Amino acid sequence: MDIAASFPEFAHFMWSKKVVEANDFNKLAAEENLPMVSDLLTLTIGSAILITMFRWGFEALLSVSFVTNLVKAREVPLPMSSTKLEDIYQDKKKVIPDINEVKKLSLETKFSVEQINKWFHIRQRMDRNQIKVNRFRESVWRLLMYSICVVEGWNIVSEAPYYKNTELCWQNMLSEPISERLKYYYVGLQIPLYLHLVVQHVFESRSSSDGWEMRSHHVVTVILLLLSYVGNLTKIGAICLVYHDVTDILLESAKVLNYLNWEGLSNLTFFGLLVCWGYSRIYKFLFVIFYSLVSEAPKADVLGPSYHVFLGLLTLILILNLYWFYAIASMAYRILWAGSESGRDRAMTDLSTDDDYDSDDSAFRSDSEFSNTESKKYN
Image (tube, rainbow, N blue to C red; front, side, top):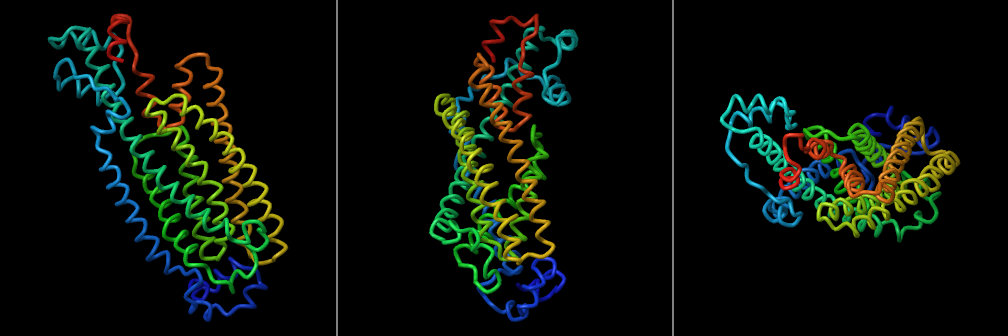
């Protein structure tokens, strides 16, 4: 409440006129158990640093050699060493040259067409294996973090009366203190985690088929978390977080199982994700969270102009949830009715949302002058 005491304009933006006139924000700012911006400047930033350090340490424990064996990323040594070929490979952004370029390189070097073709195929396979190892380590870390979020979030909301009666989320917003557990769930776990993910998307070099959608989702989520915390809307916010995080557990589990080549469990988890996504991120989100905002919140008359901000941001989240549900359903269709192993592989590759990974697979091809036997041997 310290921001409302320092900036009255924020109080008029966040809460209704009735709420503002009924409360003394200078007095509320002295309360220790109400949300404060100072919490975000200390607990959130510190926790974000700790989460980043934890990720580095956790992924370091999953050594490259261990994960390589685990995901069966078989390494094949290059047939020869060539700085020239490596430079060309990097200049072409890791795409294999066409056969005419390979013939030209053969004339410029001492290597045959077949040797050069083998070199590029194996070199790309090495990068593809490294991507697979890195994505596996990232997915295991995400799986762990989302599991912690769901367990902690569920333990908080499942025992709370407002979980079964969401009208209570809009009552006594400024008079009822936030519990210590809910406070640290918000500013010590959820907000720092999403800040970490936003920073990761800013600095990572890989492209993604839904990159803008994912970045938009994370940014909108951070804004919603920050506003709901300083406005003490943490009750409805915690319910919303649990609905979303539970699907992320299944998403990351499906990725991990796919990287481990456990096809049966991967497919089963993936279809579980489809069902859970439809129930949790669409049905429950629409008929619990969205309904509460558009029906129960106006009756309580506690929000000011911020109501329209929350409504717009949650509408965007709903649109993204529908977009991803369609994408997941399309992948499920390809897995069931693609009629080939390649159809399933492509669907599960899409699940990784990593176009760098996809391009490695699509460009990993054999040319007419590179025998099918040798191509299969090195692919």
